[in-house]
Image 1: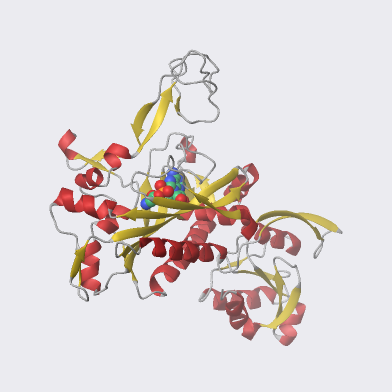
Image 2: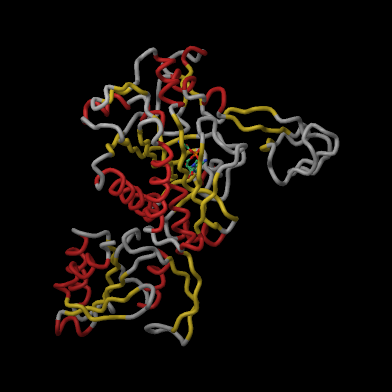
Length: 445
Ligand code: GAP
């Protein structure tokens, strides 16, 4: 993991938040390449969930919501982690922290930070929602929360969307947005952070059909994940046991990835029953039931949710793409070279191609600039004329750029360039006038 974190910083994928002030715990910023990677993932998700489907509508609800939403949703009462404090060093841990030896609250328990025995308190429930105040007065009546999941913005808008879009059940609402959790043991880079982005879809179905839809969505979501180009042997399902289920879920499956720190979830498919809509109807006093015009039946829909973390999915993609390899030396290099390469699926890569004049003379920079200007109207491409060509290739390997376009002596004679493939290192000559078409085809999936 340290190597990936260091590459992410070096190449401008992810930086620690407020680094010049010593950083802010488990909050991260996306740099020029990271923002592109995450945007590509989110756009891919939006395309497959909203644009390619007739039965799903998009939404962008505000982060701040009426505080009663969180009473109705059960988050004020139930969105908690059991925590223990060390009375000696004042550190706080989740009660299930595997580093704790013994039983918290008992004399045998040993603090994982300072090692003192008998100083850990018995577990207490700690709410994970961030609180703030709305308006000028900091009083209890003005407390509002930063949403811990985007889903609630969908539930409270379900009737608005249904009526304005003329959808019929079964149908879904999809949303991408920030969520916040005051996680106590965050960590593992962008895996568990206090501010993150979710890509969530709530699918509203007739009661009784939720199991069938649950299975359909499980299959759809795994297919989408596989489409990211992730190695399938690194993916698996994990069904939640009774003790793992969130307060709203009747059944839940996680899609897990084998990260360098073990198998962990990055997306969940949840059967949320009518838990949320029923509670919102009760707390708001507004009818949220659905009239089925065909049968004249009224019911509160059941919900099948697909909930993915954009940051965690980006981490999956980065971990899976990261390789250290020995390769045959390229231009100007010795026989064998070690390289670090991000084998990102080309359509997800932040930069699609880099343009290099072989040398900074003989008219090559002018031609290279022209090609670069042409390409960047269509793709996110990079121009690099600094250092040996071998070194320029290596920099783009680390950035995950799938194609390297080199303008050389032959280009000025026959208007062809070499295109180097990041993964195979093979080079082919392509007419510069055909480059856009060539790249478009390679980036299509
Ligand atoms: N609406 C359901 C829900 O929020 P969840 O399992 O708590 O379910 C869904 O979260 C996804 O959101 C997770 O699979 C993960 O990808 C992402 N996520 C949750 N907490 C996170 C955190 N602290 N940091 C980064 N991503 C997180």
